[in-house]
Amino acid sequence: MRLDIISAVPELLDSFFQNSIVKRAQDKGHVEVHIHNLHDYGIGKYKQIDDYPFGGGAGMVLMIEPIAQLIRQLQAERTYDEIIYTAPDGERFNQKTANTLSMAENLIILCGHYKGIDERLREIFVTKEISIGDYVLSGGELAASVISDAIIRLLPGVLGDETSALTDSFQDNLLAPPVYTRPSEWEGHRVPDILLSGHDAKIQDWRHEQAVERTQQRRPDLLS
Ligand code: ADE
Image (cartoon, rainbow, N blue to C red; front, top):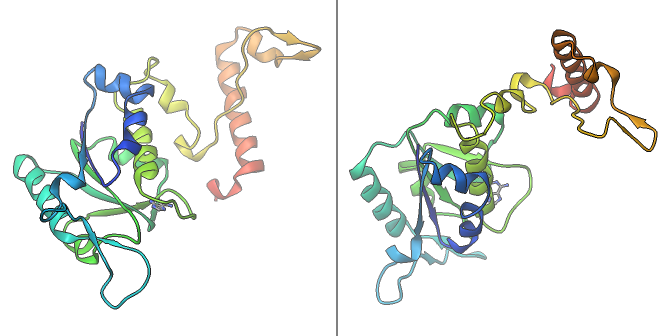
């Protein structure tokens, strides 16, 4: 997969993409991440990227030309499955969307900033608008990092254990069951006997029951 991320504050993305599982995924060649600094495409002597909103009001709006120029340049090289824009008024991000996006070949993520981007960019270029939750962030970079992480960890070979993404919470609309490790008893708190029994089929049944029970208690909305 190739991921092109467009940002006015690329420094906010650097630390995330230079660490974590995402960094390993890049080193192993599972994903190629290109972070583009919008200021490199700014207009005129001062490399302007934003301007006051028509009609007045607070905040600055990212201009159409720098972003359009960069997107067109990228599109001239390859076809993109989606051009994603991060914004609080987008569709709510979830595991299903992450699963679908993880099958893409090429993605662009355009990080929102200030009061937003010129609406014409959304109409002309953006194919998917994603919010990571009902709250407002200062910019789209954290949202882009969240979306990228959720997608990249699903790419084949990225996680050490090939099956581990399949047992995540939200796959099959269930939360994950509880997990334990050594010691089997700590200050009188014991690990459930079933997990020490060695009966693989029974353990799988128990995990499924736990997942259902946990989902009923904590997120009944996932079961309806
Ligand atoms: N930009 C600002 N707030 C956001 C949110 N909740 N999700 C995605 N992008 C955002």
